[in-house]
Image (cartoon, rainbow, N blue to C red):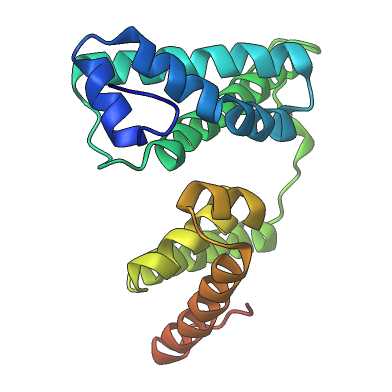
Length: 198
């Protein structure tokens, strides 16, 4: 017998086995947190509703296909889906903006026409790209808990509030892991003699 106290893991199993009521409980339990998370990123009510619906369609499809294997950590997994859909939205918007800018003047005009790079700029840009790729490689040497926090904060631009909710940890724990990640990353940079400030 399922009820409002039933754990997420058990509700998911019930739903996979055909109990629609189990998903309803799961949805009611987490919808406000996921909706708020999307809303904070988009600042647009209609768009938030669209991405929220899309998130739960993706969740339902994944559960029904039998691809879910998060071992009971439903909320962080659902938040990741929502986050990825928000990122996809921003990518689509920037791509549309790029196309409209490229067709707004002459046929051969692109946004790159406004960037008059000197040889020095190009050289600095290449060095910066190389440095960034080396940094990404070094991040992989960090302990998993520190690496995940660092990636979410720097590469995904999540707030510590978002991270704490996704990882089911306190904000202080998230901040502590980030601090140790930066300390260890600094040591790795010194070890590999990279010239960078963090």
